[in-house]
Image 1 (cartoon, rainbow, N blue to C red):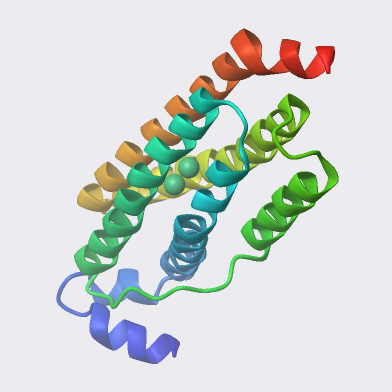
Image 2: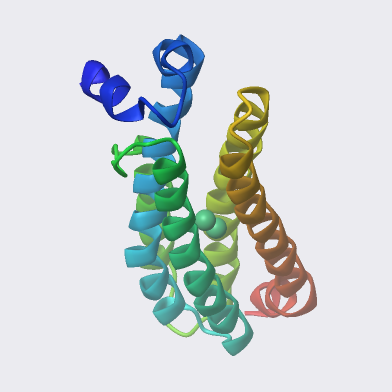
Length: 181
Ligand code: FE
Ligand code: FE
């Protein structure tokens, strides 16, 4: 499989780069986050549907649209590297999403405590993405994949923004009402 990648990458990425261990670790992690983003496109609507407060629902719905864009940015990144987009199961994201489902199951419908839990789960997801895009953008810059770095940095910015938005929602609305229930 590695050989096939190298072949496809020819022309876009120098042969030396395509064969480097750093580059193949980079591509491997792009596949991981690609799987994670596609998984989130399926899962965010469930989180939004389970949320009680409209402001949290809206925040998740808006981020779903951004997440679809994250998927297509990654497809563009693969294209820049001369590769077919390929997803590799991200066990970490699968686990974080499973945890979100558990939080939802363990809390009551239409409760603000459930929203507190959804925010916790969502912020864990965002922090995973922030860590991933932060490192991958730095690696892309190091390898002079400048177009790819630009794409990854755009997504990183959106992940950071939604993380801040979730903190605001927790501070302004949800935590206090959750504490009163
Ligand atoms: Fe994302
Ligand atoms: Fe995100």
